[in-house]
Amino acid sequence: MDFSTLNRIATAILITCVAAATAWLCGSWAIPYAPPPRPAFEIPEKTDDDALPRPISVAHGAILAARICSTCHELSPDGHDAVGPALAGIIGRGVASRAGYSYSAALSAHHGETWDDARLDVWLSNPFSFAPGTRMSLSGVPDPNDRADIIAWLKTLHPAPTP
Image (cartoon, rainbow, N blue to C red):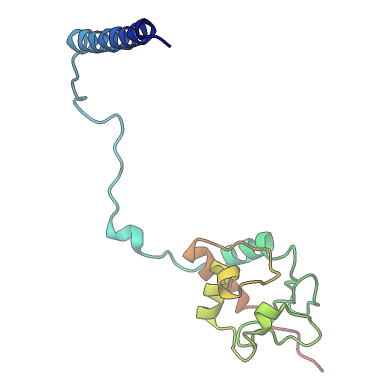
């Protein structure tokens, strides 16, 4: 490449930059920037009332459990194990302790612990962080109010008394 070719390339780049700058200046003079007199929409400020949990609803927990849990778990009080263990009587039961059900190694590592409200809340929020490697396919219930409703409903499940 000779000097005249490089000179033409440099001239073309310079002319392009000058043209772009001139167009920008003319545009900014023709239409000056002016902020809008008011925002197009207002984002409501978060109040302290937003942080308060709503009252626990057992009925809402039953609806959520039927939608989320029933695909793999039996929800009736005298339920049998399905893909997952039956959930009747889970509150107060030991983790990975239902007789006759084969738990994953990840959940069996928690054997000796008991399902209580706090442990179920952690489990329902993200089963994979509670027991990495679990076979449960639920990615979690992100809303703490929904988890509280499900746990309240699980407390109503009691296995049928044996004669």
